[in-house]
Image (cartoon, rainbow, N blue to C red; front, side, top):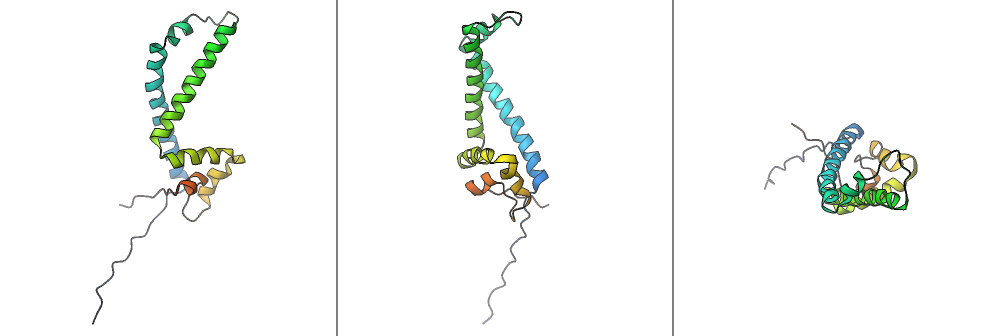
Length: 134
């Protein structure tokens, strides 16, 4: 009795460093636009826009002005964190925090040398970047 023919598994080609770098730039643009779309209305709805307009560059910052600017920075950082978290998978997002703690971008450079072209955060989250074959 002959066994049925087995289809050959398609060859998987992993995305290399430059493809990943391009994806990183695109992700950055999407996240920046998303953060601005959320943060700008928040500035106006919370009244921060009015308070910011009262600060003049030639004046010394008093305590109120300093804390106002710190509040805006905190707002942008929080919005950026939430938008990034929602844009990427949660595991990969928090894995990137670990990757960013590794000095000299080694966590990112690993993508150029590992068999499946994974950076450290990809390994933590179990993610792969695959090249689409046409």
